[in-house]
Length: 150
Length: 215
Image (cartoon, rainbow over all chains, first blue to last red; front, side):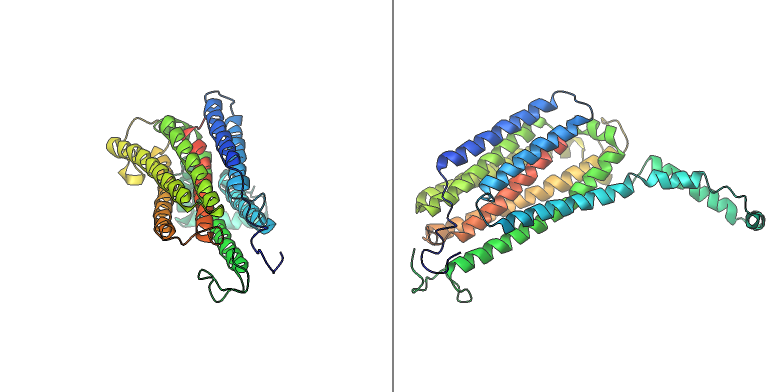
């Protein structure tokens, strides 16, 4: 970070042509590996294996082609931060979407109405039609849960 | 490389020196790439949610995609990343002609990618494997197969737009490079375009297994 003379000397990472070609060959090879691996069935690990290979490939692209290996660490931390927050985004969203059934489960098995106050509430619900509508709404919710069509 | 006493034409007056200008440009590009990750991230999140809701349908629907075409496109994009990185290197070592050649190769490979994508898309248009209400295909079992194609077209389409933008930017830089604007002292526009191009490649590296190689 000297501010006098030959200013960009320390940042001109002129890499040999051979390195670019080698990195390209490795990425070609990993592409073939990911296709070959997908021919076999590892059950639940299929997705994990494919993602591990993709992350390795992405890291190679980032470290060598995007020069993260030699460049300011700030760029790498910015990139990793974006990945981290993407992970937070997906995990928190999916912790909702994957667990909506749990909430519907509560609806299906409501609180056991043993307390004295519920006796009066049930009476008033039976008097009006609102109670029936409520049940239908619950039923619709259950169907949505099994076949989301959004 | 000119020393700090001269004021090269490519140095904008609001920067102290060439280095500061370059670092500012790269910082800006990296911030943009972070927004791009989060931009595509929303779609990756959509993918994750719907795949978790319709796991069998995703596996059935992915057979409609040709993994050979996707695989060739992956190799084409990786090759274009290599040529783009080589283009930057050529300008670093003051070989602008070689650099322009490498940029040509990058553009040609990117066009190859788009042509293969065109064949894939036109086939899907033909058989009605289209997003949402336009989906008319009947050969895929499972719940809501149109959702798979909605996500497929949204993600690969957005990625394709990025490839087209990349082609445009590289062509524009080539016209400037032909006038001798870029050399070992100043090649920042090509360098930051390279960063963008590599990110486009990086996103495809994830799209390829997620759409074409679901097991």
